Image (cartoon, rainbow, N blue to C red; front, side, top):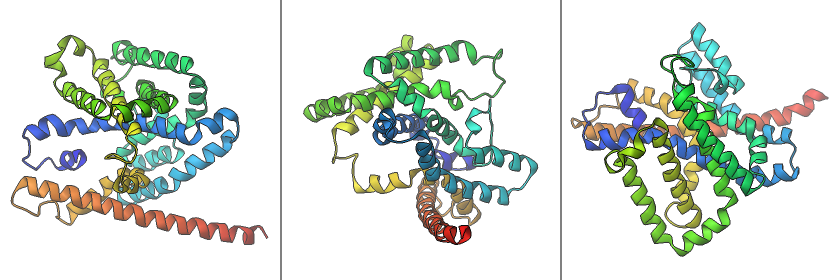
Length: 334
């Protein structure tokens, strides 16, 4: 919804909803980081900690999940707008290491900057498991990451260390506390589940209060919002609370067939929707109604539906290509 509104900026929907709520949707990337930390631990923490899966196998599995689809979109993006800069940026994208670039402003798959952070998290995940070896070490690492986050905004992210236009949210050190929060929630998942199941409505009310307090924090507790990092620590507490609620309410509300379906292609939708939006725009389907709100909502639905269709079709195509490659490999070796 945010990305559909920003590129055009022609919809006259700048009321309370847009000015207050819609811009905050960009912060959902940090919820994504917490969930990524938790989910990766669910899949690989025990295996890597016990050595039952080689580190090389871990990397092969994760990158095989991401790289083919990412390559497809990068190639398509370059073909649409070929240039020297697009080829340079495409090369950086294909290495999956572009998150290591200082102040990288990559336009090829521009909305993939979050994946640059996620790729670094995958790269560092064995070390991440080391930090989560026990709860004491995990809390020490969490404390260090929060302090480092504050140091970044207080000292390192000034004009003496970074250039103008530097986006603090694209820095892995700045985001590390969100991944560690997901890991800590994994370590306490059984206890969290028991508490939330017992006090489900109380936890739901608490999460709701924290959500409202986040938007009114400047007027409620201005002394706690005097530093840049404070807003992100608010997000850390807020999103962690909602993840706790989700852990303890299995089979209810947040866990349903629609969410399960979307979760399997969420990365593909995220990467695809910018391109689908451009197609909708060129077909002039973004201005179907006289009322801006109706046109905006229709565009959002079309972009989401188009992204889902493209994601499913591309996944099928890549699966077929993979099966074909497996069949041809023995013949080639022979």
